[in-house]
Length: 263
Image 1 (spheres, rainbow, N blue to C red):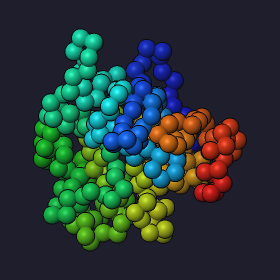
Image 2 (cartoon, one colour; image 1 turned 120 degrees about the horizontal axis):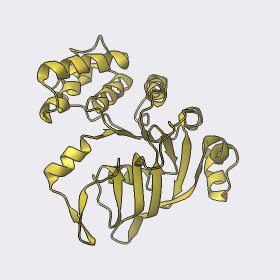
Image 3 (cartoon, rainbow, N blue to C red; image 1 turned 60 degrees about the horizontal axis):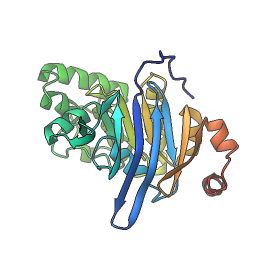
């Protein structure tokens, strides 16, 4: 388990989710979510399938828009701006710029199949104008070394295992130097023997002070890396706290039932 750094009281939270609701027709996916993540904190979100975990992550970088409520990252509203007493949608260009400060690692890698591993990692810093091509390539090589793929720079995604592709996806998320990285079940699409190599990379990030929000079913991993575990069911946060409390001494029956099935 990591320890979030001590911060002054005035320091903005890395992430704040305020009263977020999301529904599709009559189906309410998120039902009043409030969540605060401090800089450097590792938050693991658990819950059954369909509980709203992935929707919550997509809400954070405005891939999904809340019906009610709002999200801020580093003190900045995401996807909207204040207009009097209302919130007004930002332009797509402005939203894309904000997403560049929020890393996102998907279940199914989402690499560009026509680009090499090196170019997959270097592409975003160049496209956003943050780095020159030469600087982006140098950073990509550094990050690929960090995730153990320094010898795969010229390979294409189809030539890699699932675990290797996910490690490239993590390097790509790091390339924009995001303030927070979101992981949406990063090992769910992997064969069991490949899970460990991806979790090892995430553990390294967790010990480096990077702010992480991780949706996963890997309970042992949650126990090892999380500063806080959040259990969601039916679009609501049922309980949250240190992993030793939530995983070993859950207060709510719904949490106990869930853990009884996955442990």
